[in-house]
Length: 173
Image (cartoon, rainbow, N blue to C red):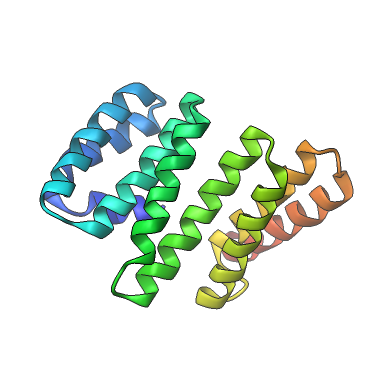
């Protein structure tokens, strides 16, 4: 995705690049070791946006390990850093991305009201940034569909999943 490829684009982030590879291979614990190592270097260099991106990624990996409380804290810390970003586009993109991730964590923990709230915000922000036909808008609808599926509201699940499908279909055929 966009955030991860931005991180991998910088040679100083080799630990993070390796962590991303291990994440994609499904080796989450090894990924965490490399991501944490890279995070420490970024903090030393005071690279706030890269720290925020890495915290978000650590939250995603931690979610896959099943530590939802820690994942939530990492993602919220990332949101806080993004809210301080100098560039408005960085703020909006980072917060929107993290709301998607936080919504996913809330779905896993069964806090469906919070999931719906942050996912709706993410969809709203992404729609304002990029319009309705953006892949992260589609992901927001997919996560909302999952939220309703998990609570047995299949009509709403289908509604949101079809919105997601239609956007992806228009974007990628």
